[in-house]
Structures are given as C-alpha cells and as structure tokens.
Length: 399
Image (cartoon, rainbow, N blue to C red; front, side, top):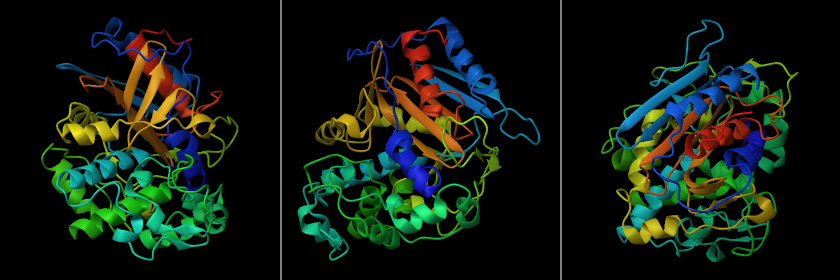
C-alpha cells in the first residue's frame, strides 16, 4: 500500500506486485543461478539511486548456506548513513502472506475450513449493497475472487488519502470493521467466484476471522506462530495507533503521486498510522526476517502438504493484474526470462519491498527501497525489483 487510495491502487498494481518479464519461461530456476558474485544485482541497486532517483535500495540474498547483502544510496537524507541489514521497514502487502498462512494453519488444525462462508464467522458484517456474506468463502477472500470492493476506492478514502491530503490525514485511525464498511459501501466488483480483483478488504476480513476463530488478536497469532518459533526478532504488527517504526530504521520518502514522475517534491512519511493496513499491509520487518519466513514457508515447514498445495494453487488474473504473474493464497508466482520465482511483495508510503525465490526456498532475494517512485520506470520500484530478480536468478546485466 501507499497512501491508502494510491497504496491500494499500488496494492492493485504495485503492491500486489509483479511486472512483466521478457522471454518468459515457466521452468524451475537452478539453485546455482547467482551470477558473478552478485555484481549484476549490485549494479541494479546502484542504478536505482543514480538513475531512478531513489534515496536508497538494499537487497539480501540467501542461496543455500551463503548470505550476501548489498545497498546503495542512503537510509536517511539528513545524515547520509547507508542502509543496513538490521534496518526495519513497513512491508505492505507481504503482510497478506502471514495472514494467509495463519488461516491455512487453522484449517490444518480443523478449527475452520477455507470453504466456510464469511457469514459463518462474521455474521451480518458483509451484507447489503449487493453483498451476501453467506455466498463468499474464506478461500475467495485469500485468492481475491470474492468480488468485495477494495476499501481504498471508497469516496472518503480517495478524498482524504490521495495526493497531498494524505499529509493531513496520515495519522487518522480506523478499526478493521470500519474498513470493511468502507469496502462494502462500494458495489461488488463481481459475483463471488466469477472474477478476480485485488482487494485489501479481503484480508481485513481474513484477519477478523482469525481473531474470531482463535479468541486472540491477530498480532498475537502472528507472534506465536511465526515470530517466536522462527526467531524473527525484528518483525511485528503495530497495535493501536502506533505511528512509529521501532528499532533500527532509516527514513521513508514519498512523492504522493505517480510512481515514475521525476519532478514531484519528496516528503518524509516515516511516521504514519498504519491502522488502515490491518491484516493487509501493516507489518514491520527486515530483509533477513522476511527471508527466514519465506524460506520456512516455501520449504513446507509452516504448513502440511495439503495446505501448501492450496496456497500455491494460483489464479490467472488476466488483465486485472500484472502480466506474467499469478496469485495463490497470499503468495504469488512471477515468471522471469529464465524460470519462475515465488514470494510476495508490498508497498506502503515510502517503502516498497519484494521477497521472491525458488519454489523450495533455498535461493531467495529480499529487497527494499525507501522511496515509492522510480524515475523513468514504467512500473516505478516494481521495475527495479524485476531487474534485481533477473540479475540474481537469470544473470541478466542491467542496461
């Protein structure tokens, strides 16, 4: 997400991830695909700053037992300090992967079924204006086939959070149920199960179902199921109206406009109220923690085989999403020129990130930029990330 309206337009386009890749191949990628000691990847990071005008860019690679970290630019334009592996950032829609994994674990524990209706768990919440929660399943929330509109397109959100008005409203507070009501104030995009449309409202509802099924706050479930057992020491979900990024971090910058416009002013948006990202885009983490989580997930250590198979059963969004990409349950596949990678990415004001790698999780790239634009790039930071993936996994040299 970016500013709510744009973030979730960025959620629809950007934060939902993925850009087209030339000469696409769906073949598996070799684990030995790191080329030239990551020189190509470092070149892309450098160009993200010198050519695309980003404040800073960093990437961490895990390939078997080896780890590499690279960065370019600065974490803070006031001090000029470099980005560091321990720097925390808002991970945007990668939050959805954590939420989907919790729901799939609950299914494996026989505490719910993904074929349950939303009405069963949240009676009366999704009703009226063309909606009927009894016809929408939990699976349809996770794979974005529910037809529930994204709350970002509601009139109030578009008016208050698009462009410079975001600066006056970035500390506004929302409850999850308020977000759902904003979503269903917009007519359905389509009848449940008949289309595909990225919607943050889906994952707000998924978070509420988790709380209903467990009796615990979503943050506690994420902590107990992933943060503690995987030792994700820098990963947490902000609670209440916490506007800060706690622990080591740089500053985060936004142009509050198109993600490829070079002439707009830049604003420091480090502090904001992420309550509108509940369940869909509010987690804070690091490149290292994200690599640890995705390695465990893709290796099958967080879900039984049946639930893993459900997670990677992908939908073809067609023209509703980005070419050469598919969406499963909180994860995505991206087809590069040399094969396919799996993971997720996200965007929120001033911070865009990707974590993608081989299907078994042995070779992963986790990357973040502390700006929400990339001058001259059609897809903004997404174009930068795609170049990084092509360099790391396919050995492509940046132009």
